[in-house]
View 1 (cartoon, rainbow, N blue to C red):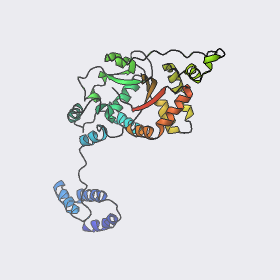
View 2 (tube, rainbow, N blue to C red):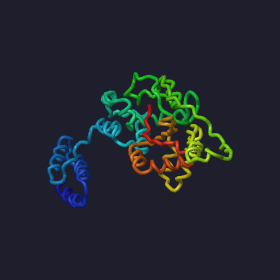
View 3 (cartoon, rainbow, N blue to C red):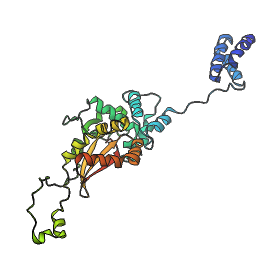
Length: 305
């Protein structure tokens, strides 16, 4: 047996990790020790060899779950959301303490923390896909969110997907009795008027300036949304940005005398990129397409409710 250890010792020296050596020792020990107790003593002796210390026990799976999926500061990338959905939604894990997970979730601020987690975005993704990416009430495929029909099992959504429903934002607002911000009425753009020839006092500089004072009319919501639909093709040479524009949800409001369009991005990294480098250019492009300066543009991170 000692000779056998010496023979395998050469093999051990070529190994990169002591986990392989530990496995080898255990295999030999069980084969030659004759009993499980003697084998474990032999393995303990082998661990005493420099460099053969066994690897420390892995982190608790529940702690790992909480760090990976319930940290609102962690960027919820599309890949991370997809990975979570495929691994955990509909697939209970016996190693996880769902009671602890539920307690952590219920201690979170619902709007400022919970809705930003990879956990919730992964669940929302599955809810939408199971609904065929259509609103359960009106059938539209635009501006979809996952809606809690009850908060009785909040924190344990993984085991109560029946409590969730795919709705569009309009139907979701109605479900929560949220009244959308009213949009101010705007007058239509009129054709330019032909002016009569100026004579006498009408030729004064003041009169001419006053007559030509015809500011832009605030564009209709439909005009802005139609222009937004043309934005992706304007940035065809920037695939990453083009993909963001195509997948963005939008909403329009009337603020400070302008038609404001707000679009969404998937995560904090995209938000920082767009706000820091691209928003002025995007705003100018939208104004150009609309043909009106009374348009503003804003961006926010997508949040599911």
